Length: 262
Image (spheres, rainbow, N blue to C red):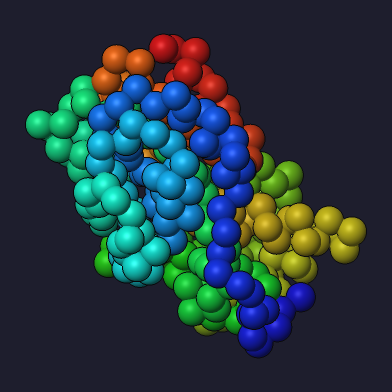
C-alpha cells in the first residue's frame, strides 16, 4: 500500500493542453488569468501559442508552486504577475482596475502530481508522511485537525459528501475509535484504519475517496470553486473565455450548474 519514497518523475506536464489552447482561442485581447497556476505548464503553453494576450496574472494558493513557476515563465515576452492567494478572491487578486479587461480565465481544479508525490505534504495514502493536505501551508486547519477534531457525525458527512464513499459511517466510526488510543498523526496510520473498513477489491478506490474527501474539507475546495466561478463572469470582458478542467463528479456538477445559471 505504502512506500517510503515517491517515484522519481520528470518535470510535471499539464493535462489537456491542446484543449485549453483551443478553448481560449481566438483570444479577445487583454489579460489572461490562470487561477490555478501550479508549476506554470498551462500558462506557458497558452502564452507561447495564443495570440492577442497583453499580460498574464498567475494565481495559486501554494507559494512553493508559484516560486517554481516563476522560472518557467520568466522568458515569455508579456508582463507576468504571480500572486499567492485563493481564487475564491479572484476579483480582488486580479484587481478592481482590471475588472472587465480579462480576456480569458483558466481553472485547473484539484491538486497537482507534485503535491501527491511529496510525502511531507500528506496528500497521498501511498507514502508515509504527516497529515497535512494544506494547499496553502500558512493556513491553520490541516488534515490532522479534521481527522482528530471532527465528531463522528462530521467525519461521516465529510467522507460521504466529498468522497461519495458508501462506507462513510463505518470508516468515521473506526477513525474515532482509533484516535481514542492516540491521535492520528500520519497518513500511514490513517490509511491502515480506513483500509480495515474496506473490502479488499475496493480498497484502492476507497482510500482515494477518503483522502480526497479530507483534502477537500481541509481546503474548502468546493466553497472556493463556487465563489471563484461567481467572480469569473464579473472580471471577464466582452467575448471573454472561461476554461475549467475538473477531475471528479463533485467539481463537474458545480461547474455545470454555474454555467447553466449564466
